[in-house]
Length: 215
Image 1 (cartoon, rainbow, N blue to C red):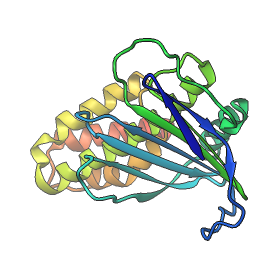
Image 2: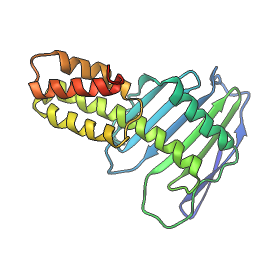
Image 3: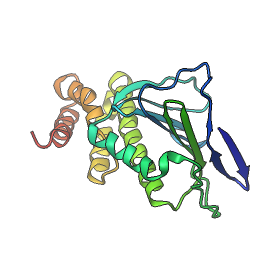
Image 4: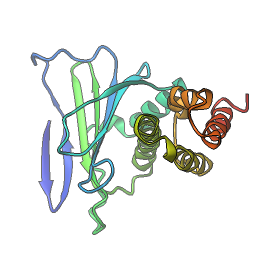
């Protein structure tokens, strides 16, 4: 893959390396990364295979890589791959708008399958399908970031849980999180443990009801 840079934007040229030492993925794989110094987190990476298995990583740029496994629903996985297909799986893609906009983070979308690997980078795009695809990935990342926040509060700052859970409720109400099921283990731990404040337990239970469709 050769990336051609000009005036702050970048387009991708497809290359193939059938003799590469690295074995190709057995299933199709899409990777999304976003890098923005000073944001929280500064770097996110989401990898999704066509069977829904994948990984997430969110960290400061100076921190070591620590991806963790995740499993997306069939509906979200199909949406991701359908949007990528609508973009021709990023073959010879040119998505950057070239408009003078603020630094929104360098985004990279990569498609891999068998011996094929296509990638494209951009700061901002006006292509609707690309924006929709980024939106899905960012909302999944939002759910994973909520997991990080809850896990930290459970271990080190339980008094902050009521506010953190309220923030999650607001995000859910605004449809800012995808795959909220990823939060279930943390929410169940809070809702069932009497060492946490009653308000935190109640809010965790309320979120679980929303995630489980009111059950």
